[in-house]
Picture: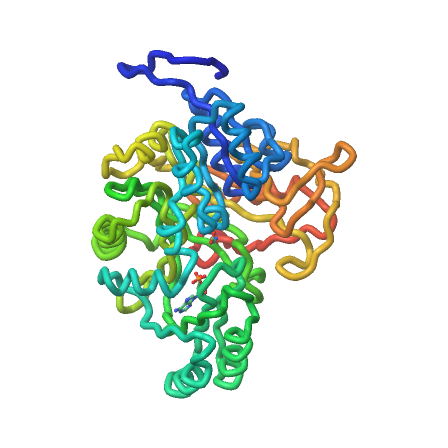
Length: 443
Ligand code: AMP
Ligand code: GLY
């Protein structure tokens, strides 16, 4: 719907909104797809977006790092709401920039300010936050470069596997799990010596947690929160969860082992104390919190917080959200959110990523993608690493696209996602064919 000005919507008079979404991946594709369905949307701009997102809005070449250009764009296009997809702009203080700039401070921003984004931006900060607030997580110790000898001595006192984490953002590569002491000592040297640049100027050593991982998400205004559907991601490149870690190769929602008892435990022991902690510590937080969790024999523990939605988790969570996100975003930004679950579809959603051959290591780009126009019932393709070359949509990233299937049950949803991906080809395309197998969703 394209309409300017106010309209009567139910009993409230609600203004149509111009929205700017920042990001270009599958996560932002799913958010754009959802927001484009809102009757409250006037114009959706996506910076930088990708060719698939042109179906939902207008992709613009505004770089969030160029604050003048961003500011000028928001003013010129009368932007009402900015949704920040990835973590880098949040940790770099983009939400603060909007609030501190008089010409932009009226704009609603979804995404926490830098201080609260430290929950993702610094592992040490998030561990301390969890410890202060009694939130179950792996025991840890943090070391700085001038504590190298102490760090190595500490490693000799604990058992394998050794979990070493760069404190700062390291593009998903900063966590090492090592089976023997010699490797752990060598990696400690390398990390504190600058292997990940400033991100590993501190290294967190964590107790190894054994269990099965899943994620829950909330939208919060820092006081109240809306629980969203949970998801399980498949992080490794190889089938049977083998090989290198990736950004995520597929996801399913709901997660069969996340039953009512697990959900209750997560709410009481993890989500509630996190929100209370934010409030108590006066950390202003407007946006999504991604709780990376692990179900262990000793209950559910937090592996990490992210200050944004997950990718590819968003591609299954958002299709299951059964209400309009735009009014919720406005309520969150006005700190008027009500604590309640977000309305969710009883249908399942499953997504499978199609990646460039070689990913997550070196891979070639620029291969034409065939079959994007071939539809399969109740599926949607979210593009991620794509661009346009000579009029064709071509590969331009590691994770190229994913297909999400929706169905009354997860097995059918997966079947649909795979059927859709079967139609889409490009040179070197790779996918995992075992998404959901561990959950009994696929033979
Ligand atoms: P993170 O970036 O902290 O989420 O870590 C990336 C991945 O490493 C997680 O998704 C887990 O698979 C694994 N991991 C992180 N911390 C631990 C831990 N303490 N015990 C076992 N596995 C972990
Ligand atoms: N899929 C994991 C993440 O978004 O961090």
